[in-house]
Image (cartoon, rainbow over all chains, first blue to last red; front, side, top):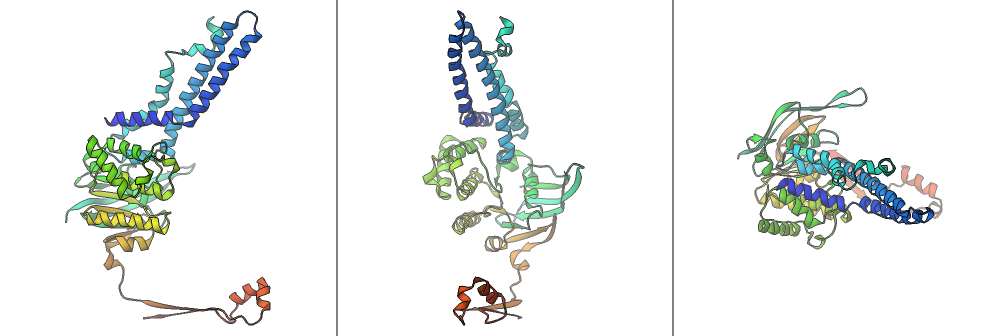
Length: 125
Length: 275
């Protein structure tokens, strides 16, 4: 129950983080840009759209995982919000474990959709 | 009266700088806090007040010494269930609204839904933040943050509340409001451990006081024992309007300054003598 409360708060913090919306905006710009790029190619529009789309998804997915994961841990320690949590009857190791897992959690959540090699789509064509 | 907090021979040092030079912050702190009292922990900046509180709450670990809260180790969940903590310069999860924030913290105490809702409402009423329930904490002023911090410290209805500089940086009205809450806690029979460097606050609220300087407790006891009621000095200040001799003194700012500093016609007189 306590873990659930902490996890839900972390999720809420992540989705209310302004950097998420900034990254989503640039990801959308990249995907739209792939349509323009496709016009420049001769005959292989789909490949360009697929490659640029997948690359931007993986790139921005990785950026989200890194920036939000590290940001959440950093804020927790820098703003000392962790003090009020650790002073409550919870196991401090659980909190730190949760915090340290954060970037991996984000990274792993993107992995099924965008496997690592999709960063370089030309390699597996 | 039962002892709720007992500290014996607490030592803590930090390794600072590139060469990891050891700096002793706490040098054998020993004190005890009885049930129902407001205990003032007084000392100048950098004396070790916050470090002591961090050691008590298990945020940092002392090198030597023993801390007991309600007879349990200070790290045990049983001790933490009965304590509340308001940190110095509180920064909370600013993406949450006031009600979400209290709801989150109440979940850490496993409060039931009805109990939780009732508690949140009454605490918001207590700290006078009923109108800001749906406002995100990032939009809160310093005083409002201090008050919501106080509310989160009281969520579990604690028997012992640690307040680290609760009145610091507040305007006179904000200070009064928080002081009233502390007095109310005292009236409800709760024990308050109040750290401050402002003598006036401690004098107004506390029953017992410990004075810490350079990591050592130099004095502790009941407030009336430490503060002498005998008047040692009397200071009489007489002030009045300055009589201006010539109009030219007004037109020349440099001369105006010099007349204030020079021994000429003094606008202010101070007499002090030993009683």
